[in-house]
Image (cartoon, rainbow over all chains, first blue to last red):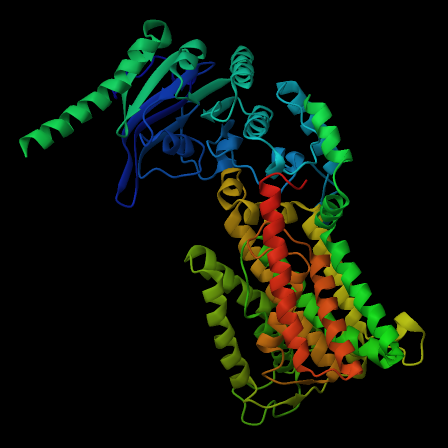
Amino acid sequence: MTDSPVPTDSRQEVIRVEHIAKSFGAVVALVDVSMYLRRGEVLGLIGDNGAGKSTLIKILTGFIKPDAGQIFVNGDEVNLRSVDHARSLGIDTVYQDLALVPGLSVAHNMFLKREVTKGFGPFRMLNNHAMRKRARQYIEGIGIGTLRSVDAEVAMLSGGQRQAIAIARSVHSGAKTLLLDEPLAAMGAKEGEIILDLIQDLKKQGHSMIVVAHNYIHIVEICDRVNLLQHGEITFDKPTAQTSVEELTDLVAAEYRASKQAAAAAAGGS
Amino acid sequence: MAVAEATTRDGGASFGWRLLRWFVRRREASVLIIAVGLFVYFWIANSAFVDRADIKNMTEYGAPIALIAAGEVMLLICGEIDLSLGQLYAFGPIIMYLTSNSSGEAVPGATVAGLGLPIWVGVIFALLACAGIGLATGVITTVFRVPSFITTLGMLFFLNGLNLRLLSGEQIVLPFSQTFQNILGGYGAPNGPFPFYLNSEVYWALFLILLVQFILSYTRWGLHTVATGGNLIGAAESGVNVRKVKIGNFVLAATLAGFAGMMDSERINSIQPLQGGTDIMFLAVAGAVIGGTSLMGGSGTVIGGLLGVSVLVILRTGFNILGVNAYNFDLITGVAIVGAMVLNVQIQRLKNIGKLQ
């Protein structure tokens, strides 16, 4: 299952990883992960807490370097050196922790590391006016919540508002490939629907996305294909048309039942 | 419903809450009020306080401390601290002296002889040497992951020993020209009106402090410094090179401290290996904290540091003039530091639970 067949046209894949492994000291996060993301596709990535989903996302965005394995972007093998490097290849990420700075304004967070500047050389200054204006447009464009001001510190905002800012930031980064690590985590039902609509709009505009989510109803609703990550390996890869919420729930629950039975057997045997 | 609620909250907030919010938003303004209040108090208590000599004293005593505080504020904002800035304050002028001293024997029994190069080369060498020390501190802290408290504690002792060796523990009278002395530290029109009788070092310090505040407020470097201290992981995930930001601020703080030392040494026309030291460094940190810079990183201003140092300087001079026991200065400084920090922490807490906007 992990050795996906090489497709006829590798240019159709925006991302492909082969045999990625990553450990943090004694903790093995990823054992041997091979997966791919086609152009214009929405891939759902599911798995238990601690299965390695966030680690995989962070490797794909250049934040963590894998111990082993290869990464291909648009068919070319790359060694992702940094977040900036991945960004230059058109990959941007909404992290699970959102990567917002509480003490900075909404506008500054939206443009962190992509600041709009004016002037040149040593006189290059932040163009706060432009950043405020564009931040306001981006947030209005997403249609979430009513922010009192883009000058407000992120520390003052609710979880849903923060999530919206993090998503707006990635959506407007110019990246064509978006990695969304639990984009609905802090959202209420209504905001969640807005984000789901947004993901479908982005797909129509030609974006490719990997979406990490725990809600299988959402996965089936918005994804073209779903991968299950278990114990650091991809153990399931199917188009969503050929699976169902029940099957996905069963897959993950089966693992829980198996481990419970094993524990019971061990307890009974002793 | 939500709108109505918001209106009552804004319009109906008690005077106390509104006052508190104003103080939070304008931390520097509140420290400025304290500084001005103290100034006026001492002025009324004893008019000698605003004598030309005392004003001059206060500014020349405060200028190097405030300049060191400017660098320390940048470091505190990005989540680090440098305890060795007081030793760099002595190290800078020593390197300047050893580079540019042309007389046959540099220091009686000294380890290193003078190179006799032009004085401007001496200034550049000294700044580069201080920057190099800052670079070393930054690399050890970020690459080898030693807490900066420890790295710079080690650097403090190392530089102290180095300074003593370089000058063989001697005090040296600087041999440089009056012109150079005037430019860098000492000159003030002795009979001129108010701002003109101040020493040139005061203007250097003010210019550099405003420059650092500008960098903090209006450049990408400043924004990345706040981001690094405010959310280290988040800033890194956003692509900010947090290691580079920290190392750069160590270099900046070290260079400013070295320059502060050169200004002061030129003003008094002598250097000694133990000048500055932990006293000047702790006053700079105290000024930064009183001025609203959080030791936990992510917030603070250079102007706030300048105002915090001003409060300390006004207190010390005022006590002198009123003939108050000098022990009281340390006593009050201690209370002011802890008080300011309690305020910092509690304001952050109230902000986090959404009671302050």
